[in-house]
Length: 202
View 1 (cartoon, rainbow, N blue to C red):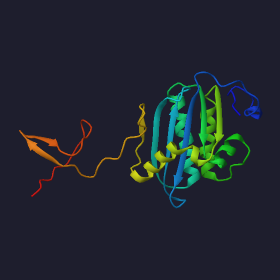
View 2 (cartoon, rainbow, N blue to C red):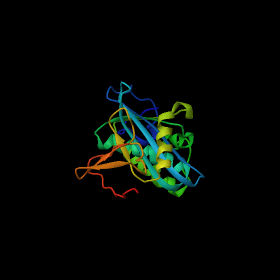
View 3 (cartoon, one colour):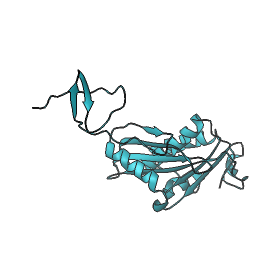
View 4 (cartoon, rainbow, N blue to C red):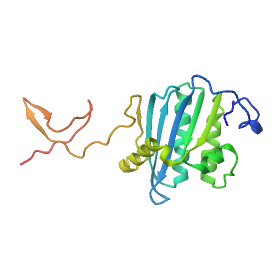
């Protein structure tokens, strides 16, 4: 159930007003290959009309699934707070995290306790908040971003305000040709300002 941050702690997930018109929704997911193992999260942010505002993902190094799930939640909360949004709905396929945030499950892991406390701190800065559990099949785009982060393994965060939620990985090698002292790429492109190393081909 949603809540307003000014309400007493014991009543955070009790009855609450209808979702405000400026509500944004975050689909979050996190995973680890090996648990613990290479991990990452993915987040898709949408406005109240379903238009995508941003896609976020990050490689987290060797962590657990639950750590990655909480990291995705924190990324969504930080996005909302940093961009001035006061109402946030989070949709996650982590039943454990959702029930811990709602207070239905206790948090016993020391590492997760820190993440849980940080999440509650950020939630308290919002006027309206709701978190909901869904099956993984209903969270496909966030799952794709999380897997992309694990594939990249770069530790970088991709943020986008367009319909394309994350920056695709750079190719390992591009081909080009020198014309009038300038290298022109033949089979790809790079952002302006990208630093490159040149190796002449035989």
